[in-house]
Image (cartoon, rainbow, N blue to C red; front, side):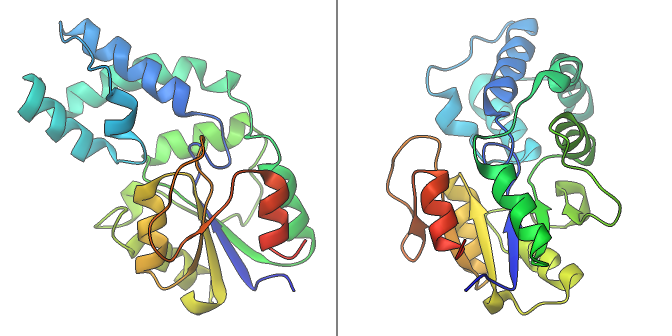
Length: 210
């Protein structure tokens, strides 16, 4: 049986954008004379821009105002956003669910301009599409507000929805929202307690009843 609603993370889940995010972050750090840590990817995966900025400020001495810093990163990111590709198998599932009438939304910890750029790059934009960006909520993931906002917009009970996310941060948010949560990491790893852990689009289809 297909679910009533499916709410998707974007970066790393629907769109293979994590490498570009990391490359833009590395370039911005080097541009201000900071050597990126070797575990940068693990430190920032699924984390919104402001907590990443706080970490870089407090632990690595970043001394730019946030607005100037984030635009430095986006100046590296946005010109290359058009090169992004979907995560293999993900958008096919999204479109199949859409054809079946399943309520869906994209729920991201990224800023609105990144959400719009990424979804346009992979051809996942249409009238009436629901998206929740970091700019649309007070508290981002791992708190539940972004997924609860999606449920409100879709008019569904969170308990009737699935959340699909590739990061521990996002999976924790889905669980906190009371949703059945599918954790689909980029590389095999343990998920948070209560999450359904998968490692392929085939497994995703099975869990969503397709």
